[in-house]
Amino acid sequence: MKAVKLYKSCEAKDIKIEDVEIPKAKENWVVVKVMAFGMNHSEALFRKFEIDNDYFEKPRVPGIECVGIIEESLDNNFKKGDKVIALMGGMGRSFDGSYQEYALLPIKNVFKVNNTNLDWIHLGAIPETYFTAYGSLFQSLQLKENDSLLVRGGTSALGIASIIMAKNLGCRVVATTTDESKIEYLQYLGVDKVIVDKNNFKEQMNEKVDKILELVGARTLLESMNFLNEGGICCHTGLLGGVFELNHFDPIKDIPNGTYLTGFYSNYPSQEIIDEMIDFINTYSIQPELGNIYKFDDIIKASEDLEFGRTNGKAIVVVDSELKKNIN
Image 1: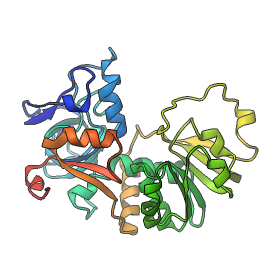
Image 2 (image 1 turned 30 degrees about the vertical axis):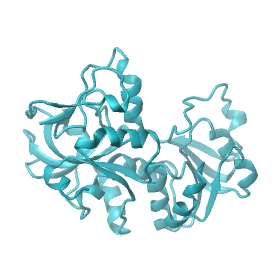
Image 3 (image 1 turned 90 degrees about the horizontal axis):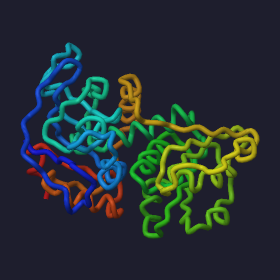
């Protein structure tokens, strides 16, 4: 079978696909035939920097999520042919991930999705992005119908998924972008107010909101908190701004009175939450916004496009040979 293996940090142009043996199932691990996988910025960071840390075993197959079919299982909860998604929990980091045709994955990271009618490519946009969006909005922000929501980083894949969910629920949505060319796209998604943030957010944000999904991260978090209504919640989920921690953070002074700061860490999915998420998607007939779609053989271009922001929506890589026939 074909697989990408990382031996050390590298640029996208240096990624290579190798021929390796198909893995065998073992206790508490199943073999998944990978149909497709979505791409994530964290994979680029892992490839370019983190892989060199001594605590990562090498070589490593990257990729934190995939959709596919159970190929082999020793566990009674899974049978050959089950439609599944797999994500997070060390996938593509502590153990081999999705950039391969068959993946040996721990059962704690694999979840049945037999109740979805999405095709494989659209389903490929779901696992990590929609799980993180769903958890951020409904577990952490406790989003309700008619809430007002600010999404900072609205044109990221996670931002787009969150906007789609919030608008289906009936929320007023304000979203930020740094790219003026994305205004029309955000309006197409139903965003009620678009702010092009050129370091002048305060001057343009002339209202307070009930909930804030902070995807830019520590760079804008404290600024965002000032635009919460009393009783409002801000969820820090993303790190798009490239600042990973707050220096000299003083929660007494920096969290406005009567507001709440929380976060969502997507490393611990469960079948219960996955089922809730799929039910929400089914109820509102949500079709994920797809970015560019690539064949597995084009993983270098896919990685470059993701790294340099050359796609709207979720970038999908199609692995299955039959599905690839439909990709130009």
